Amino acid sequence: MLTAGWFVGIDWASEAHEVCVLDREGQVCDRRSVPHTATALQAFVDALLERAHGDASMVAIGIEVPRGALVDVCVERGFGVYAINPKQLDRFRDRFTAAGAKDDRRDAHVIGDSLRTDPQAFRQVRLDHPLVIQLREWSRVDEDLAGDLTRLTHQLRDLVYRIAPGLLTLCPAADERWLWTLLRDAPTPADHRRLSLRLLERLLRDHRVRRLEATRVREVLQQPSVYTAPGVVEAVTAHIQLLLPRVDLLAGQRRDAEKQLERLLEALDAQEPAAGDQREHSDVAIVRSMPGIGTRVAARMLAEASQPLVDRAYHVLRATMGVAPKQSGRRRTVSMRYACNARLREAGYHWARTGAQKDPSSRTYYAQLRARGHSHGRALRSVADRLLRVLVTLLNRGQLFDPTHSQHAPVAVGAGA
Image (tube, rainbow, N blue to C red; front, side):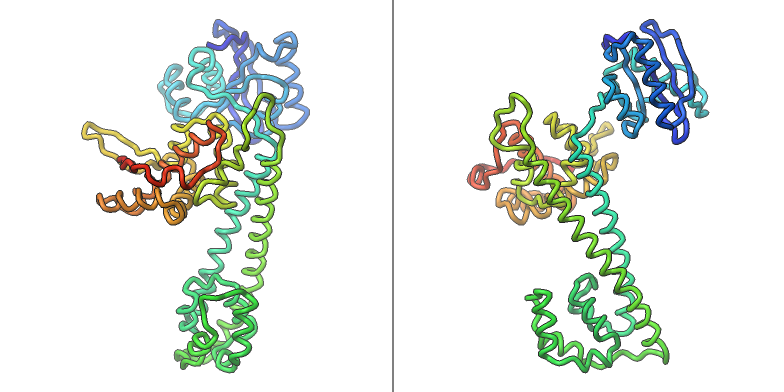
């Protein structure tokens, strides 16, 4: 049980927050609406401190949305701030009314009283390191840029397919820079056929493309054009020329975002350890030592799962990442867990996919799961679960990943979803 003398329930809103203050016996002492302005928030915090005679530890604040300026100012002033899952709040709401209508004032009361009687249903909110906050923002920016770039390259692919489908045999997704340069310098099929072998060799060399031979590219470009109605080539070419600068811009911004993520990871790794921390390696170094984890996956994990990683909470991590199987029903049906952090789930997928290629133990484990009839996705989730278990163990020990440590150890095949 919490030892606070005052329990505050806050129903978060974009313009004004409903607040309900209760004492230790559950009596409502104050209700108010706090506008989301700097002056109003500061006045609200000062009023809470005055009620607690300046002792912030005597005030416990419950809230449904554990982020934003309101949470930041309350944590910074020393109040205990606790978040609750919306589904759990819905269950507590049934104690007060059976009606399903949404009422902000009632929800504030429900949160405050539930924090008083059932604090175990809440989790304490802690502010992340400033570098982690920046890392989270840049990781999400990078994700948005990747989505926008994919949409534009899909459009570019459709346009190329209309006038020069042969090019897509060389670059099926139309997402490589050498192809963009070629389309910019030689927009029409007629221009393609005029490109010399020396120019194509220089193009591939400048973009460091080794998987293609210049003779192969020229052979494709020399193929007869598909028939199109008069005006189609001109229209599509004009559209491509409008699209290419946008593609280049997004690709450049994404490269800049990756460099920024790398700088933030290095800065976070260089931080001084906490007092009493005698470990040789930081959490950032340990995470980045795992097979399959590159800059983007490391940034996403450290940003989206910062608190579970600090707490070494393996079961929280596997549920949040979506690699913990969902089991329900009398027949114990195992299925994929959809209620998770989508960003972490995507990071776990790429981690497992690359880890199964680079780590012999993970590759053997994946092969065993596939031999048992598991689908590709289910096998990768089990690989991610195994790698996550290894990561938490290394974090507890303060050790970097050693690829030779378990090279000859037997691989246990679990029943992950």
